Figure 1 (cartoon, rainbow, N blue to C red):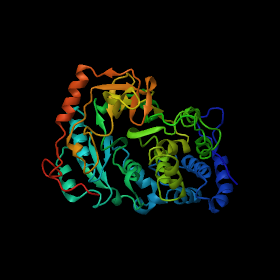
Figure 2: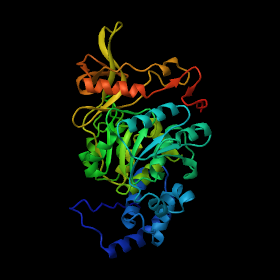
Figure 3: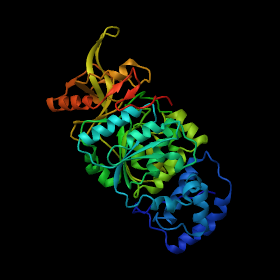
Figure 4: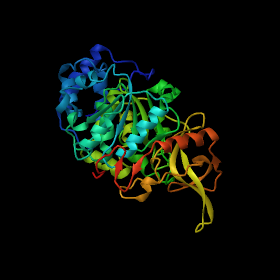
Length: 426
């Protein structure tokens, strides 16, 4: 037996009365006590929506046997450290806005550059650096980062007992952050503008969640559509139907190097995001079908039928124009670049260095970034856009790139930042 709750924002469906809610609870409870197939994401979505309906105010205690059963069965990963989802909500409500960065020793030098660049861009938001235990980020590095103004270092293991690897930490860092509104950044993200402008974006203001598109790669492969649709109760939202993955325009949707989330507005959706990243068959399937944790952000919100926005501009490539002798074509290879609604360069990933490999000489070589190309005008070949047109950065943008380069100080021979930092092995 399954059931579906249609949220109140669907005006053609009337809201359940108190009596009807009680009746549903009394009827549904025996069914919910039955074992649930851990791979039945659609049924998990239904129950998560029911829990959101009977627990609409996160800071209030969960009441009733039905609420307690749902809380335990859905979000046990929260209860281990927090005791309840209510305690989790109370830990960040009223926490304001802030930046969350996850890093280990391997990318620590990039995280330092990111913090320095944010301050250079007059971004005064407080920052949390999250890591996954002492082997992930050593004591010397944590002590170093604490010297920065308004920067705190936090160990995810103090908040969750969930086994995490590499990217897994990102959604849990968002959930555990003390901030109510989170700007989540990868350590190798580089901004060309003050990122605080994103909080004023019309999509974020409307929906409380702002995402950026990944490259549109491997179009025409529609086999993922059925798998995606199988996770969500019907009727499917217009948001879902318009995604490039559903329309077979790309095998990837979301670029998680930068995203914004209002945790108060998306509390239940974020709980679902966390569930999707807990060890188990669903996480394994998502890792097989996609790339890391990134798609789980929109999937979790969609499970709760919560609205979100994507920046309308597709990404591009930032670098220099070269001629490929083998293919006899001009191409622009470099960083994956993202643009604001005004079309101006906003941020790019893959760091300011020419390489991120831990033993690569090019860690000390700064990338030559003079031109950009747009996905809608070119043709992707890995991180290269081919055939143009290629656009030169304007003088102000070129000056900003040089300022960003001046903040990166890394000695690959000594394997240290200045001041010294220990090795970057994970």
